[in-house]
Length: 176
Image (cartoon, rainbow, N blue to C red; front, side, top):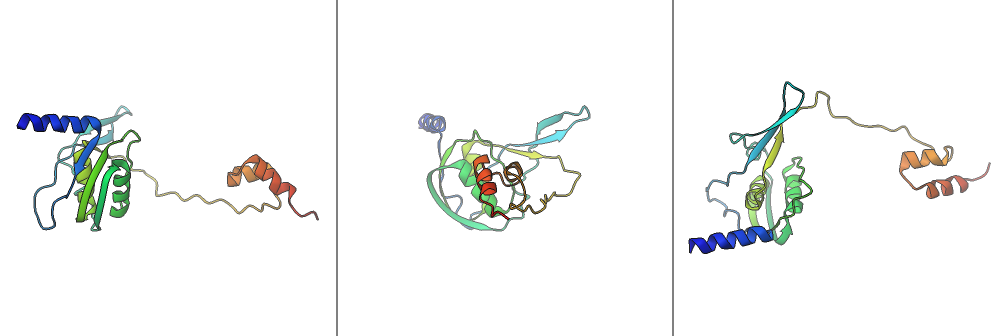
């Protein structure tokens, strides 16, 4: 019996099909599954090191209280994780090669618990950064551009339209 379960699990894993169905009923206090956490940090030599940090759990550090209910069958884990991160109010980058499919049924669970269940079930890990920017957040400001006065190249550079469109705008200007 145990051997057939292992075989079934390996078949499901190789096919990329996972199920994180019914993430803990509300009120049940079972511990959430552990997920591998790695930390990227600068070294004295100017390089960065990536080390496993089993004592840190960035998902538990989230102060998100948003609760979600979600049912999905054979859904893209990447899409679900990004949606859950948005619901939790956190910034999350998912590697482009994440291609696992999951079926989930979450009913009134916190967004971080749902993220943890999907990450654990698909065999993913978290990479956190110890790097902090020495600058405050940057806001870019572009001065206004009067499209009735600038040339086609400036219109392309400022607004990202095609050269044909920019030339049409310049040629369509009212003549003085």
